[in-house]
Length: 118
Image (tube, rainbow, N blue to C red; front, side, top):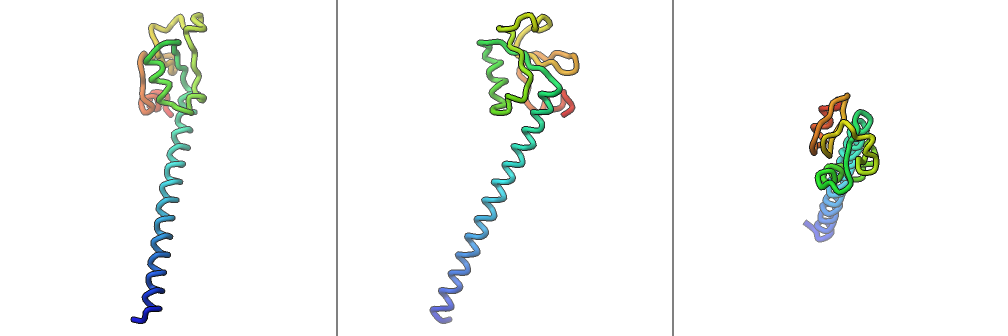
């Protein structure tokens, strides 16, 4: 094999490796974006079908809110510290109101998804 043929072969191998690597990176990037979009849609649905009651200074409430990250904005949240008149049915916080039922305690997103039918 001539030197020029070897160089050409190596160039093609490098080119194909770069192309393959770019494809893998793009696949994972868009796959992650799709997961985030689906998760946002689920959280929007949860927010439309529930109310979260929290209270200033409640450690578990903070844990619950942190589970939603930037998507927390999609939830209906009532802070019982500032509006106690809206919390007469609440025995503790955090509490989720879903379809007229109250669920006390921290709930994960999958459980909320099932409870709300999202």
